[in-house]
Length: 334
Ligand code: KG4
Ligand code: ZN
Image (cartoon, rainbow, N blue to C red; front, side):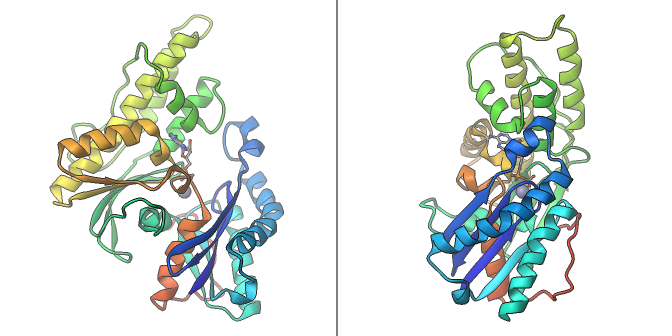
């Protein structure tokens, strides 16, 4: 079964063709340059750019997969959670193609896409078996999820305020480092040197909740203590301390959950899972706790079309269908 998947929940326009769970193509048009001057995603600009980018991205995905639209057996698109104006573009395109071609269609939950991305076949990486404990950390969400099967995913706890990726972006903006903040801070944190100390909210709580709004304020207060702003060395020390605090709390909670629920595999998912420091720390702590760690390649951690095509393929193959009056949802628990 060949499935065309469309992702447009935030600022990346993406499309992918998956055949029986294997990725034939994975195309993405990044809008980073559009949003960079604003230090974050501007929803109206994101929707407009999806309109411009989507058709060429779909055409390229078909071309790369060496298939014609007539050979596609099903169409899927992210229908939430995300920015409504952004979701509308991809969702409406998918419904239009499905309707005109009389193809089955299903709306995909973006979080489910992230959480199952590590199960995509053919990445030359080992895939986790069910059940696994997943940390999903992205620009919009941060939580711990028990994934027992493709259809049984339970959120055990999530952030009370900002998402981890949002904290990275806000701190980078505060330091004048650029957008998106995650990869920039990750790079700075990898350079050896002094390190600031920042608080890890809810560290002693036995819950799987997070809070990242306090650390952003803590960084802002520390920055304000440097007359004329922090110099390069001080910036690096802040980046290192910030990254340590975020990475340690993320890993601590998912490992705690895996141990408590007696699940032997841990999965990293979402844009923040591309973080080298997070991957290294998770590997160390999982080793110490006799847990197997899995993470998709970095390009499948950040938003992409293949995770949506894959999750949608699973739904279609299981006989699920969405009706053509399906609308976008800004909030949609997995
Ligand atoms: O999953 P994603 O692409 O989009 C959402 O669903 O939100 O995640 C985007 C977020 C951004 O906040 C970005 O700063 C963060 O993921 N991110 C990273 C890294 N690469 C992307 N955060 C930390 N380290 C990275 N290397
Ligand atoms: Zn995402």
